[in-house]
Image (tube, rainbow, N blue to C red; front, side, top):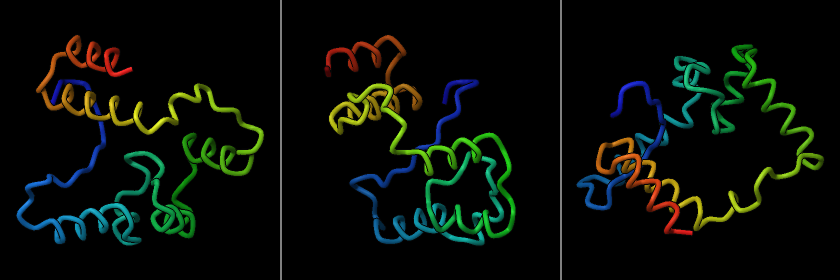
Length: 120
């Protein structure tokens, strides 16, 4: 991992020896209400509705990220996409795979950027 770079990505490798157990563990990390209470919003506002509800019920969300999330949820019809292409699943896959390769040290910044550009 490169110094000063923070990324939260979860995945189960295709050759994982225990994929079911790995999936259960990821489900726990993302959706368990008790774990959400331990983690709070230290890694941002949870994407999981279960975790988010747990934090809301315990009044543990009051930061800027939460305020922005609530504005987006209740005003979504009036919010335009900044770049519609960023909703394209192919673009997301190209970006995600190259970002992961860069963060894990498998590709340099320039290699990852070039792959992203060529992917389009």
